[in-house]
Image (cartoon, rainbow, N blue to C red; front, side, top):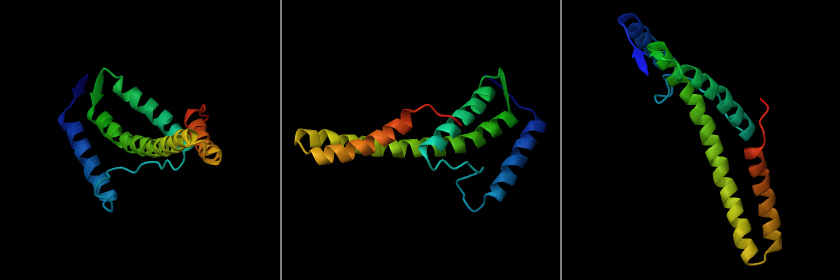
Length: 131
């Protein structure tokens, strides 16, 4: 991919970065606001929508400076969505491990309880998403 850069777009990029840094000065690590992904469903919807936006930009023959700013902005929401899903995957793995260990020791109550928690998470993670 070729990145088209000229003086005008460089100035626009610099202006956007400076203004966004001032706008979000409370959080030094963030240049742009991200959408929250408090649930698996919302995280999956945010991934779907923002991946489409990212693909539209990154599939261009030439990526402009403004495109790069937009990509940078999109990554914040994508990162938050992935963090939510990662956390939920960890919980699902922990519950499945409880099922596994309880099945070895024939602890039917633990198997039932942990399997319900695991299934709820696994189903949410694998269910088709309607956004």
